[in-house]
Image (tube, rainbow, N blue to C red; front, side, top):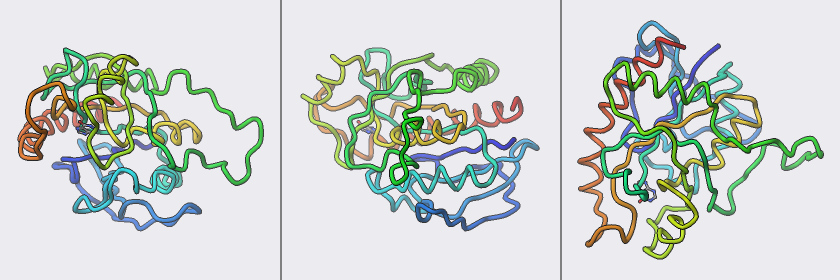
Length: 245
Ligand code: HPA
């Protein structure tokens, strides 16, 4: 049993991870975002993959999600903690808040959604009613409690196409749809993990109020400030979580 951490914006490396090996993995779906790091965190073996590649050069709509998930599966990974920087929509999702979403609405388009696209059979319509693994979700929440890091339990993650941020009208619609937060990478990543029977859950850090919810423009400077502090908390939670897996 091996656990993987997929790092998002602001988490391109993991402090405390003793890297034993870096592996270039090729898959039938092409190459993952970058080399996979295999190492130990708190004495537990972990695979780490930064979703946007080294140096954040792969934008959300160009991430090869199939290659990333396939490569992790090929290495024996059966649990994935996805870390995501997101925009807050619901009132309680202000910048710096951490949340463990429990639902997804997918607004992306044109992304490869399945490993079975080219050899599809009826049994490949796979249940996705509850997109996140509940046991893993609870484990993240418990790690938050054990490290005294506040985390919101639940919320719907709206996945948008990017790389642009949303319009105010799009966010208004997403709020009406019931989205609590908005990010660009949650799908098809979560579904592809489900197709390969990998337990998957997300730790989401709010880095800004979504479009139109505050006056003024959303700046990367603002986001980066929140990211730097928030990711320190995420790392604490991950270090605790890993010990329980
Ligand atoms: N929208 C989409 N993705 C994001 C945002 C946002 O406001 N902030 C961080 N990732």
